[in-house]
Amino acid sequence: MTAITNDLTLGDLLKYEEENLYSRDQVTVLSGQNLKLGAVIGRVSATQKVKALDPSATDGSEVAAGVVLQSIDASAAEKNNGLIVSRQAIVADHALIWPSAITTEEKTAAIAQLEAIGVLVRQGV
Image (cartoon, rainbow, N blue to C red; front, top):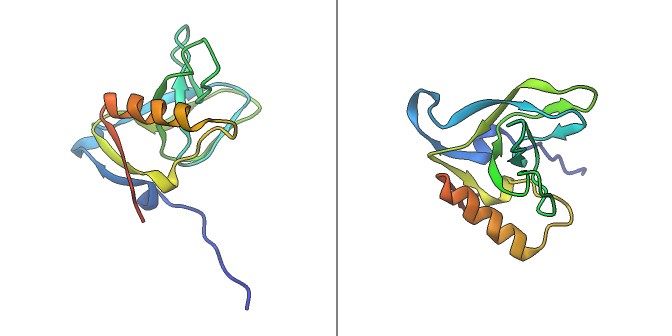
């Protein structure tokens, strides 16, 4: 029998957030990005637009600034309707999407950066 696998849902990722959408921000996603639910993002300092976390960058996107709450494809053009959690929330570690080449040290630093802004990363199921 073939195994059926489902994509992760918001409930798999987001375990707690403050009331009245306090934990969420609407953001502009830079062109060339295809961010999936759970992607850890960084914010470009000069524009305040977001893209996938890039620990080797020097434009601000090397610092974790939140987690994507809905997939958004900005491959062709930037999108201004990205939704992230950026404060007072708990997310499940298994649902986070990290850059493919991230090291253990960089991931640990990014988790600490998320926790510093109030996004706690916890072991989840």
